[in-house]
Amino acid sequence: MRKPALYKWTAIVFAVIFLGACAKKSGDKRERIQGRGTVSEDQSLTQAPGTSSGVTKSDGAEGYWGEIVSAPNTSQAQFQAGVQAFLSNIAEPDGNPINLGTVDGRSNQPTGIWFYGSAGLSGAFNPGGQNSLQVASAGSELRLSIIDSYVGQLNADQEQIKEVPIYLSQASSSFQVTGWVNGNKAQINYKDDMGIIQLQGTFDSNWFTGTVNFQNYTAIQGAPASGSLGVFAIRTCGFFKCP
Image (spheres, rainbow, N blue to C red):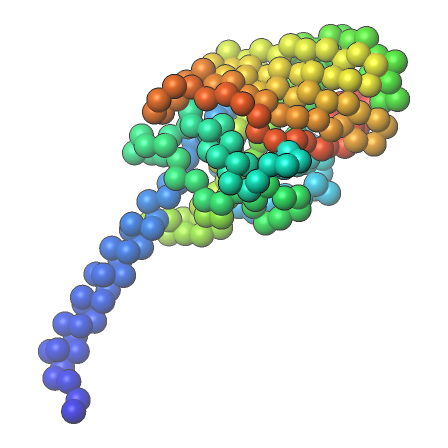
């Protein structure tokens, strides 16, 4: 038997209200997250850039995105926990910790962590080794992009959810970079008022690889976190300024 018209429209109204409420609840994820540092709206990412994507850095130099993945013998759950700890000093707009989706610890996946950067050096860099250089703030920067499984979806305002952006640069008054490059080894410490991000590793004429460690100075809840984020790989001459 066909339903009366009143019943039909009442059902439709309740369905719209129900779906709207569900959309609002699921859409509470990351509405206009500020991130860490200053990344303009038109520079925010809505998909993984990939390590073959080029970038123009703040000094006009050309570079490439690198990738941060889980360390050997580290499970996906451990990698995910490390990313969550790393982002524990960044809040949702309502002040709560970020509701983070899945961030894959494997290379070349739709979700993950990508980065590019520079290190201002006290002299000319030799990609083949034989270096004895100090790292300075001038000429240095570090840009990270955390792409989780929410990125690309719509939030409650029907806006496309974007990355969690992190950019440590001289635009921040608290920005400071220290470190060294000896032979074919390097350690670079990027510091702002939220903490330190350290890249430590080795390089040849093709790739700069190593580990990413962090120490947060602040936390949305509990004590500030510290630890290892994972291992990185980026083209040597896409990071350092090669002759």
